[in-house]
Length: 233
Image (tube, rainbow, N blue to C red; front, side, top):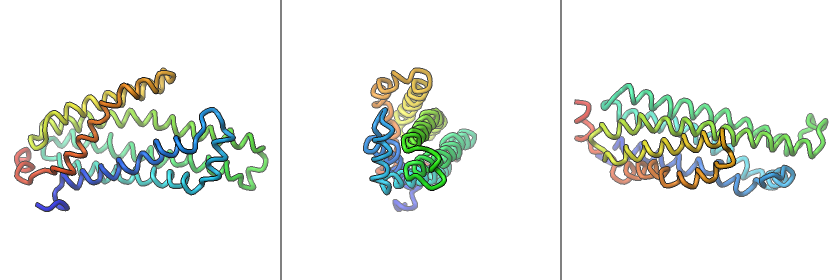
């Protein structure tokens, strides 16, 4: 079975695209353009690098789209193992996160309009527009913290499917469970105890490599057609 037709590699390549696209807005742009506690400097950076900021908007839209195709590819892979868990995986890992990605773009679009200072915003002074832009950027960040709940929850049905499949190593499934708890811990810490968010994120980082290991296994190894037929039968 060729790499293109191998359902495991198809899912792995889509996962790889998501791993490449999502960090653009999630990590790179905040670390490059945002100045913590300084709305004026942040607005100036966005205005000076508007194309880069717009690239972040595109990356969010692309990530949401990839999410949908990724979970559909994984559904195709695992539906013979347990269809109920596969459907739950699609809802928690594709439909709901994709909706959040698309809705969250509105926060960045609002921030960009405030930074550019359209005519209808002339009623606001420049410092007020900068503060409002920072507010929308903060809302984007809080939406990501909330979305981490879904990033964690969808890994549990996926992990069960991996463990039961027989065509993927069980250790990947157990690692995905740990990865899911790591996301939940990060999300609830960000919502309830934000001052400890960075500490928890650093501690949870090794657990988050479970998704990377799973993705690399699919990209490199794929799934043999004979192994796929076993659970279905």
